[in-house]
Image (cartoon, rainbow, N blue to C red):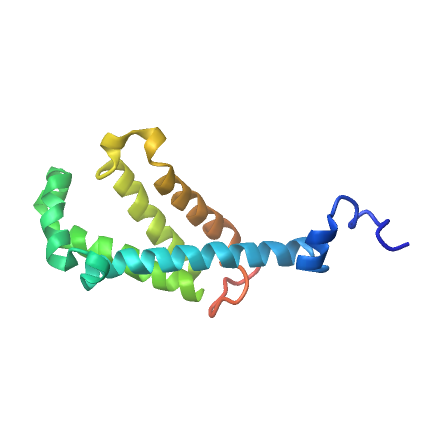
Length: 158
């Protein structure tokens, strides 16, 4: 009997119309795709600000100049840290967007955001940094579950 099976119970007609008969696995793969594309575009843009000076960004010189303000560890080697930030944001964004080693790209972005929370955004406090915390959560989801649908180089399944 159609509409009476366990898998159809609780599913609204609108959801069935929009998503058809997607299995839970397929739905998760497309959900990860949406997260991956958003994260990739966001960090491509942030990395482009730092690497090329696009979108009103400071460019590489501005990133190097910012490093000493973050503390003595960053002041000692500002060029090194600036390169890591640029690689983490731009490189991580590109890897995640295209699904080329998305777990590694997400890890790069997550590390970048943890350091940003501990340095740049530290004074703002826990309750006002929900955007950064959400980005870290998305990165952790991609690290755990992979990049989802349409990855160019998907993670191997065990």
